[in-house]
Image 1 (spheres, rainbow, N blue to C red):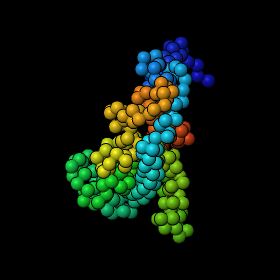
Image 2 (cartoon, helix red, strand yellow; image 1 turned 120 degrees about the vertical axis):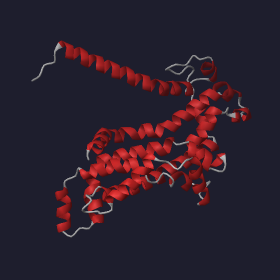
Image 3 (cartoon, rainbow, N blue to C red; image 1 turned 60 degrees about the horizontal axis):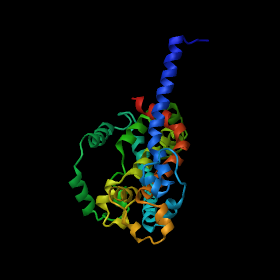
Image 4 (cartoon, rainbow, N blue to C red; image 1 turned 30 degrees about the vertical axis):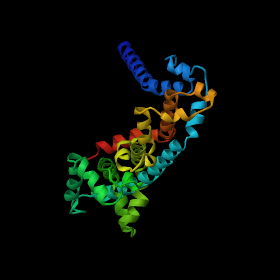
Length: 293
């Protein structure tokens, strides 16, 4: 049994304290936003809120959840998340499988690999990207948010490296038993690659959920914005819908700042809820998929 020296214990304690401090610094903005959203408008406006709500109230959340604009943007983001993640993973899984083969088994592998790698290194630019989507007639539709990023080459590279680390004997035995490539992919490769796939699902979900710029330029009107694009306009521009509220009690408890806090926290909540279930796959999947050759 190895015993740490005094210097080793001090070093470990310092690392633990530093990481704890770093974690608290990362959590502070989110906790502050939550506290502001649960506080009264007077307390939030006076800057009295830090990590704990002042004059606790849920009226900001009640107002936000009754706003048709917020709910419509939320539904668009959920649709984008489900559709986009499914398409991303289907194409990533089917793309990584042939590219994981040796050149002797797939003679065109090197050409295809370079074809996809070049897209990581060189981009066509924003204007050609927009014009292509426009010419395809996708503007203003959910497909404009999903199809342009349907193939994520970075994710495909991670997954193909994971595939290449799987025992080849399993594939050879399946071929002997009469299985084809499609059966081998879905019956052997995918089940054994779940740590990497779960990691890529998390990447895809976070990417779709947090994306806001494409919604601003590809949608024809604010009523078609996904949630993050809608929130971007709310955070940058003052929410004038408050002027229409006539309830004095609501006006006293709700302000532009508390509403922004409520909407930001509600937008982050789905990813916060999903991440703990995928976190156990995260480190293993990303490390193994990045070190194999």
